[in-house]
Amino acid sequence: MSTITLLLALLGIASFAVLFYFLRFKASSRQTDRDNRIPWHKIWFQRERYKETKASIEEQKQPKVEKQSSEEEDADFKD
Amino acid sequence: MSKHAALDRFGRSGNPLIRSDLFNQTALDNGEVTTLDGAVNKTAILLALTVSTAAISWNFQGPTMGLISGIGMFAAVIASLATYGLWIFRWLIKPTPHRAPYTAPIYAIGMGFAIGLISEQMESLFPGIVIQAVSLTFFVAASLLLLYKTGVIRPDQNFLLIIVCATLGIFFTYLASFIYAMVTGSSFSIITDTGLMGIGFSLFVVAIAALNLVLDFDIIEQAAENRTPKYMEWFGAMALVMTLIWLYLEILRLLAKLRS
Image 1 (cartoon, each protein chain N blue to C red):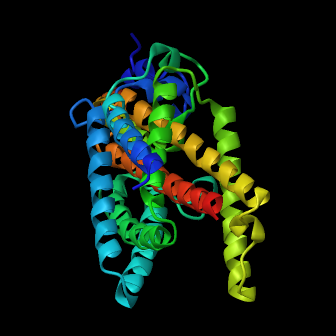
Image 2: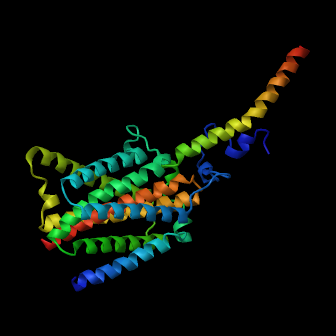
Image 3: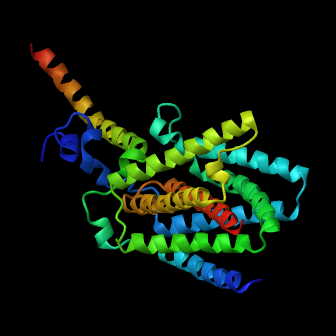
């Protein structure tokens, strides 16, 4: 094994350790606190969010619809 | 407080999807969510699978292994298409991130067989090249991770546009070269040329592959920040492993050209 290959192998091991160590840390505020970030949520996460939103709206609508229908029945009865 | 709870939550817009702040809300309060640790673990699992299958195909050369590698590469392409769709052309094949926990290991195993075969052939031609390529791949990845985490490189939509256009350009160049090779029997000289043009092209491709890593880090970071579902860990890890494999193959090609 040549010297350059050996040096590169050591560099590779160190880089591997650095990669897997720092990947666990949250990025700095300089990276995260800005307005022009790539909207990955719109690109990849939209479908999941849409499902959750739809389910949430339907869940909240459910009791209201029941209440309204009973009021309407009362009003019809009075007329 | 409005009479309608939905209005308090989403505002007056009729369509909740056009409210940008909606996406910043907690995705799942009860279910498991993406974490950076989880994404790192999944990346390690996928890399371990790739290296294991690469070791098998490296050690057991022959026509059978060639066939297995071909099938593996085909399976990897199908797995990546099943997960990411055609992204820009999503009307053709839609991205389905929830499939990532199943498709990511298939991709890693399939590509492992293929890169094991390629690496062994390169190593027999240029001894020591594989160690150099692997080391440089991790060196580039670690450097870009530090630049990303510290905020030196801050990817925005323009950055995304440039990288996606360049990546698509490279993809179509390779595709055209592949079709040309199928018809004429020889590929584009810019890809295989060992002169300045060929080395320059390889350097450009390595740079674009490396910058794709920044996008992968950003996907993982934002998936964790936005508390997306757990399967996004596999999705982010798969994206990272895909780019690492691409970067490794391009560095391997570049080193081979330099040695030629």
